[in-house]
Amino acid sequence: MLNPEQFFELMSANDRLLAGLLIVREGELHNDELQAALALSDDGIRLTLDTLVSGGVLSVVDAGEPKKYGFDEELSVWAIEILRVLEIEYREHLHESLSRLAAFQKGSLANAG
Image (spheres, helix red, strand yellow):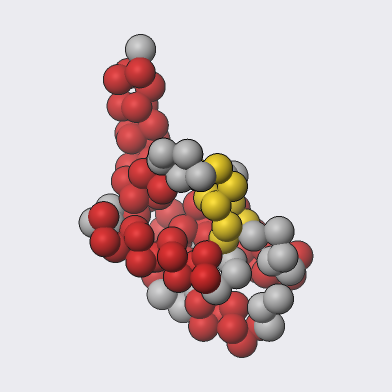
């Protein structure tokens, strides 16, 4: 289980923080949704998600393709509550990522139909 120092160190990178804020707001997300929302390269999203998983913040909740990520079951409630508060404070900052996520999801639905 993460202690506060470990949690804050893991979340100190902007991409990792935004990934956590998106999941707290939207719920479980696929890696390609997070990649589109964060505008990261394949290597960038892989590094971000691998770091959050190995650190105990996220876990793979569906190992299909694409993988789906959510909060790790062992993540303390206080950590999720901190992200909820930050999501409110960062709402304006999240706007661009949420717009990219919505566009990606709309495109995915159009391609599936």
